[in-house]
Amino acid sequence: MTLPMLLEGRSVIVTGGARGIGLELSIALVSAGANVVATGRSKQHLAQVEHRAGLITSGRLHGVLADVRFAEDCERVASIATDRFGGVGALVNNAGVAMRLVSEDFETNPPPFWQIGVDAWREIVDTNVSGVFYMSRAAVPLMLEQRKGRLINISTGPRVMRTTGWFPYGASKAALESMSATWAQELAGSGVTVNVARPGVKVDTDLFPNGGRGARLSEGFAAPSIMNDLIVWLVSDASEGIHGRRFNASLWDSSKPTDEAARLAMLPYPELPHLF
Image (tube, rainbow, N blue to C red; front, top):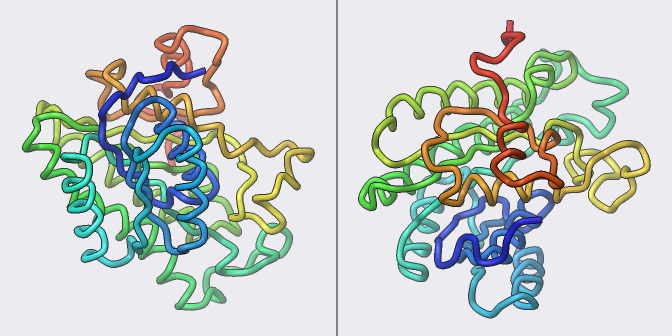
């Protein structure tokens, strides 16, 4: 379990912070003492995450109706975080869309790439790639002013990036990994760290048909809270100096001290096997 008040006063933006993994991350960060700006595209879901956070403590979570596909929305989110909580200490690029935009039965009847609609391609790439760039572009300069910050990109495993039936979602996450590697080099020595976090397993969210309601836990899917301890640790001062690395949350052992659990969850670098 994460220690309460580990992140006292730290300002964190969580994109897609009102549903699925993002909702659980938002609540975990608030529980650890952070001030959270959670973005989402649904007023109803934002109201729900604000309510849950309010049961823990008052005023630590602010929901913002925003769409990361639009650069102006991302700039507005960074401005709100600064005005409300005094800056941006960390950004968790969690917002993402997946293969249900292509087909509801993509798992059993995956379409080849030439049959995928242009609208589905655009929404997946605009959200998972451009949205991460827009939000990071808005937030990182604020971190650089403070000479400290955490940029955490939520990704997936290499197998999904190259498996038939997962295009274009897999390709969007491969792009995210490439972006993260480049940004880590450009931010080296700046005080702003860049790391990639993956669930490491399929997670019971509405990215999958019939998901997001606990229906798949009996089928071996992990709960959306699987990322919580890892992300709280990455946002905290305990991860100081950890930069340009990848982590699998499924390898986190909560029975161990957090530093040891983090070491066990850290993937080797360079990661093998390679993407191709």
